Amino acid sequence: MIPTPPPRSPRRRAVARLVPTLVLALVASGALVATAAPAAAPTPAKAAAPAKANTPVPAGPGALRNNPDRDQPINYSADTGDVNYQTKVGALTGNVVITQGSLTIRADRISFKQNTDNTLAVTAFGNPVTFRQKRPGTDEWFEGYAQRAEYDGAKELLELFDNALLRRGQDEIRSNYISYNAATELFKAEGRAATQPVPDSPGTRVRGVFQPRSDALPGKGSKDAPAKGSAPAPSTPPALKSAPELGALPPAAK
Image 1 (cartoon, rainbow, N blue to C red):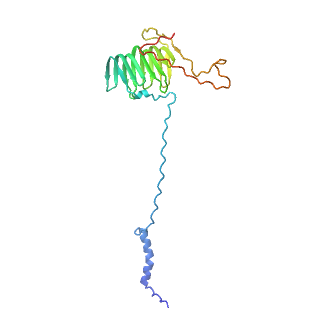
Image 2: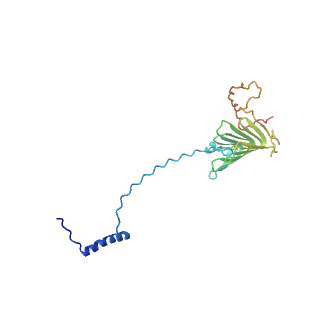
Image 3: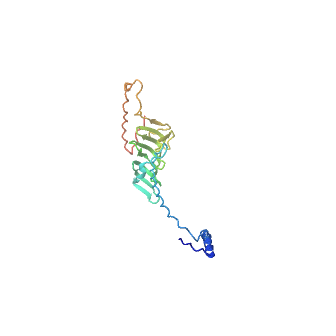
């Protein structure tokens, strides 16, 4: 015979009815907090792909080249000189020679300064002033001769005054004023009168010589023309003329 549990007293029945209400009240007030299951460990983020290195874009037409001369020290010599090492400004007289990398300037008298980008700014006087510099990325040189020269290395601009001669490779031009921008490889010449009498002056004329292009095709009917259907022979660049002795102006073009 299964024993029958004794009946609950009225007091116990009241407590049983009150427990659910009390639990709800504790949860609502925050006094009773259920234990939550442990959170899953965060998934480690994937390592970011390394950034691609930026490839330098070559300078376009008209942009200044990365001339290696400006990274070289500036050397100078003269019979007498007055140089301020704080301002990087100087005045030299007598057999003046200034070099920086491939750049060489010779004159009787020079005022110069070092620009903030380590290039030169020069005003030179001589009989004549001679200027010589290698064209970046080539085996050619450009040379200038005049009674006065202004050079701004920051702009790569050379100006020649009075009995001026500019030679680039085998091409040359003469006038009493010539400007040449080495960054754009453009020159300008003006047939102006000389500011002082100079022997063999070109006067108010502009004269020049362009040598034949080495890549020019032979003329029609020429015996040197390649046979039809055959590959053209590779062109051979002309040999460069040796530079004239610095300090002596070449004879005037006829």
